[in-house]
Image (cartoon, rainbow, N blue to C red):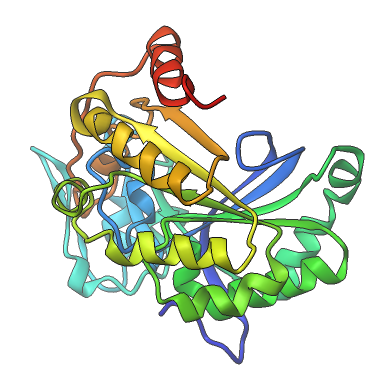
Amino acid sequence: MCLDKEEKTAVIFNIQRFSVFDGPGVRTAVFFKGCNLRCRWCHNPESYEKTPQLAYDRQKCIGCGRCAAVCPGGCLIPDPQRGLLYRKEDCIKCGRCARGCYARALSIIGSRVTADALMEELLEDLPYYRESVDGGVTFSGGECMLQLDFLEEMLRRLKAENIHTAVDTAGNVPYADFERILPFTDLFLYDMKAFHEDVHRELTGVSNERIKDNLLRLKQAGAQIKIRIPVIEELNAGELPFMRDFLFENGIRDVELLAYHRMGVGKGELLLEEIRQEGFEELSAQKLEEYNRIFFGNVK
């Protein structure tokens, strides 16, 4: 894990303020690095690894070679065809190349934060949380539950300040991890991608048996849960009726369908590890409304 329990630190890659899409009210969303799914449509491929990563925007590069000159490990090599070659195994992730890049073509995605520093930053938005209904803090990713000690510490501190907390998770962790944070979590934003295990494996690379089991156990424990289903028409539209029946039959009715968008396409190409992504057809507002009518039509 990218967490030292004694130091109470974790690696995050973004803090998004004034978010209205990551839970109720006005929120601050904290995005953790590290994920144990590989969704084919992922919007945040920079969250895959738990450690900071080097990103390179060739469009900004002026070819000066300064990054290679200041790199102590010799992991960057100018290349006429690709701009830069990257020897990841030699990289110590010191950030000198990014700091020395005149054109800002290089950057480090992800930074290690302490619980004290993050808490101080989150409390700066306290007036906004207080002025909105159930405003607060959402922890997302990646998969925030992969840095569980730090997550538990932050949730505990926020609840001590009477701040609403939400955890955005894909649920692919041991249930014992949920038990640790249940007392400090007001809302779970729980992702579902597919119902059938073979389809889920095809779309995300992992089984969903533990994901479904954890969801039912959370429901039995009395947790507040909001299901979020990304709709990618070419991939999982046929799974929607099965997910609906599974959820409704188990008394889980707070469900939101999310339209797939292509904002994440191309982000993987900025990483020097060269994560390749697939692009799919974006779902229009009209099409999403049609899926909502079908999904909820005989229930609401």
